[in-house]
Image (tube, rainbow, N blue to C red; front, side, top):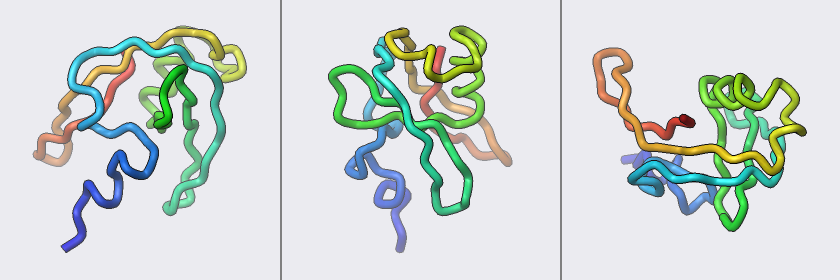
Length: 100
């Protein structure tokens, strides 16, 4: 059995749904672009006072861009709030982290 937690778990250095249980405010200190196994490039945020990184899905990236602009360099020093959320995808409830 392959556990989803093992593949995407927080021990890998990235936030996951078990790390944030209520809305929390973070300051963006920087970012980098990372290519994941599916050859998809994603923005990874470096957050102040956090060892873990926050990998942005497309929706979260566009939420931040709509608030602070398309240039990710301009996001440094800006605050975001990350909250746990649940969506329905293909008839199944999926836990996720959402930027609000």
